[in-house]
Length: 358
Ligand SMILES: [Zn+2]
Image 1 (tube, rainbow, N blue to C red):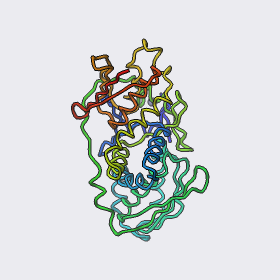
Image 2: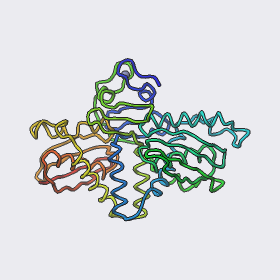
Image 3: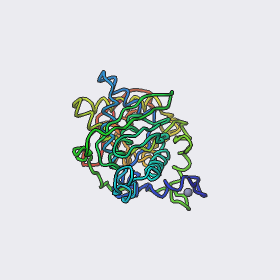
Image 4: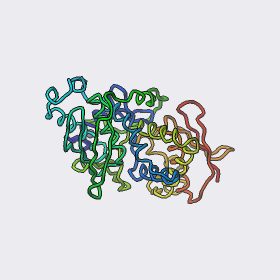
């Protein structure tokens, strides 16, 4: 891995990712994968909270939803000639597979998803993978299964077991001769975003915004990203993972789920935000609370102000309505140290308005 001599950001990611003027981070791949920086604890908090609310484990659901995302993600990353190569032990030499796997796992490590290593690989049949310090075990297992399905063009299922405190063995096994076709339908393509005019001070060498290279630190040996301001572990997650997982949970558990997710996120943000980092007292400007939204790929906060309905915040291109609404309310509550009543609407597609009243 090479690091930029101007700002020390990993060169490969600076090249692959684009921090746009509209509050999104987009991969420069064929499908323009959208990424968002989230705390690993924040994601865990949502998954654990939903699971507790449901009263059942949801890891299998998360895994299943992510498999389709993993497949899509890999399609856009791995050069076509690898996926098109003939299958089978003789046509597909192990060193080729191992090189592909290394490429994929290295890439995931750079996004903060932990380390992955192939222990065993039998083309079209099965594989065993060791994963260490995963941001989320079912998400990584889903990615792994999706990659295998894409490369081998068979349907697989995954199981995993913990072998050490932060180490798991994932086993992939063929369950059908074709990858499941319906997976493709669950992925929405949101490829248009409302235009914005965010400007960044950028590194003169690699063009990555300096706020990003000054804040996000990569430990590639462990596959861990850390926010140097908060000290918390973060991950660059494909926004598709959120859509896919929540669509699947929603299908299983119905329409109360979105508001559960929203209040989980609101509470996490309220309890884990260093408000002093954002704002020097309320007079410091409430809009500063949302100043990291754009570079994290959360969305573009275009308006913050008091109306007769209450304090109103408008964010364009939110990566997920409930998550972003919950975050906004939680940040405000952390600032004023009080709970507020809040509502939100999507007035036009891609534009989220959150209204808060003390
Ligand atoms: Zn640079």
